[in-house]
Length: 466
Image 1 (cartoon, helix red, strand yellow):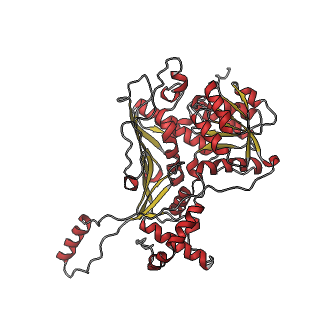
Image 2: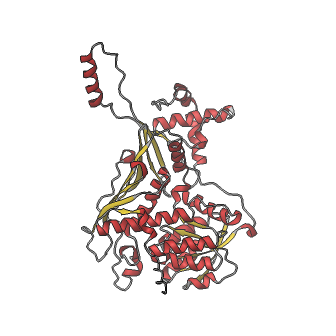
């Protein structure tokens, strides 16, 4: 393939003439998609368990969709329970015991946003109650739960289980995966990922509520930075490589946040995949700088590196757009053929030591900006104009909807149609497995193999009688 990714001269010249129109049109299209109202009978009746910060966030987003209706919410902490009722916007029933919610026959699906240690009990009981389940990552907490969920789902294949790994529902990440699969980046050899914060999670000052409200800081409830942050980006690497790691090794430390927590406040991990491919991951709580995107974003992002190109990518938030930039890999400079052996030797040395200058990243183009040849004249001109504006940094491509909305729309659609979720049970279990093994690698200071999960958390068979 050609190494140069430069926009065509036609893109650059024709773009200037319709730039204003493209900006206006993009501003209109950048708003969240408005869905046609549906009859109440087609809305999936659901309940949500765990109305803390994440639960309230999802309830607020789902309240704007027309495919599900919240009938009940549950939380053991009264202030959060009240906030959950308000966030749902549908006057749901409120419970402190999730089993009361599961006992309702009018609830078809359950959304689980509890602390990690409670994911499995609620997930198990929801499946046994015949409900479809959306569960935030990490799907499960312990090795035995990996095997138990796999067995439960095998017995109930028609019940949907979807994991909250929203990057799989992002248009930018989907295009990046397509580019990788088409060989546009050559052979992918390395992925770098980080999720840094400063200071990150804070310990609740009230001793009576400390563990309940700061559960992420205690190992008996949480998988720490690996589970709460790294799980998203470990899943990206699995998705891009199309395989699970062979092993993981790493270092974790608790050096900076002396507030009573017992989870690491900084972690560095290396994963090796088949064919020597690697993921290098970092999460620290002393600095949130992100070296990608020219420093325009902080905290989290991924760099996908191939032999013919690289992609810098990060998911969007409610206030910031997703970003995807593609860089081609410069080749050696073209030289005149040398006449003598001495000149050839000199050229060989120069080729090894000479590098080209820096380059500009090109925005990943979403489907609406791809030139297919089937567009109308106006649509084609608008695409050229937008691409010209992207090249000048006037604006960036934007997804049609927040991936959080997209993943919830997909979940309710899977419930209605029986489709397989993009982030299905096995993807969620693989992701949870890597969280468990990563923490083990740091705790024990050794290389931990992915295959070890098969022997972990199994109940030993009783000895056979003679």
